[in-house]
Image (cartoon, rainbow, N blue to C red; front, side, top):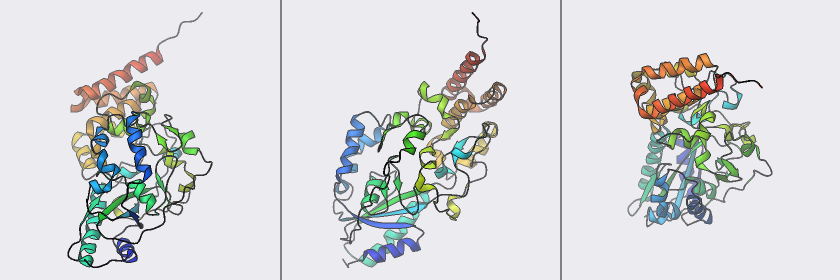
Length: 356
């Protein structure tokens, strides 16, 4: 196997469209042990796949036995559209910025495979490697931090001092002994804006997110009924939540990507809630095609729309619920329960109060 320089890998990564690239040692870093503790504390909620793949997540050698180095890459997905915290129109809802364009899994995997193919050609016989995006059992933020791409902030997102946190991450695990980069240095300081702004208090302390309180978890991961305490907070966040990134000072000057794949598809950047309620099954299939929104699926999206309607004036709330009931999913137990619960909340809210 021929040697390969880290500088050459970084140059090729930039050529393929990645904004950052670094190399970390393939060792069990102490931060990985926090994952096991986090799961044991019940903070992962229904995400049982994290426990099921825990051995691989704690030790990269469980994923690739011959691994020596981990190449970590990042791509900026920020767009010129407003932040969710700047949108004050109650009739509009927010979809997480990362899901506005094409599914990042597909785009990142294609680029990573191209980088891997180039590395294989340069290294020659004996080269072993595999790629991973966040759907794989590699704790990407830990290795990105160790590769010098940034630091894991108090909101648990990876933050780069120049690019902010609007970044997709990916890795290549290989048996190449590449030169390592210096780890990122924490620069959150005394700032607590993400903790203070979290709509549900899910960031329970610096660097700790209780997934069971997080709107991203509630709108994407929870397959059944969303816990009642979280339901009023779903509006306006119907898929994911960007608030902790919106308020981060390191994102004030975050660059805007011109990458076509990340640009908002029509109707996904702060659409009117009633318009999404009226969207037909066929129209939704077009929106969901090759989109990260597929993770939630139409039933869970309409469940969230029902919860989000609660924040509107009563006439608009009832209009939205009536429209949701006209679709095929309106009779689905998941959507029907959400609609029924919101109707009950509206009735209680508008009931005449007795005087004394």
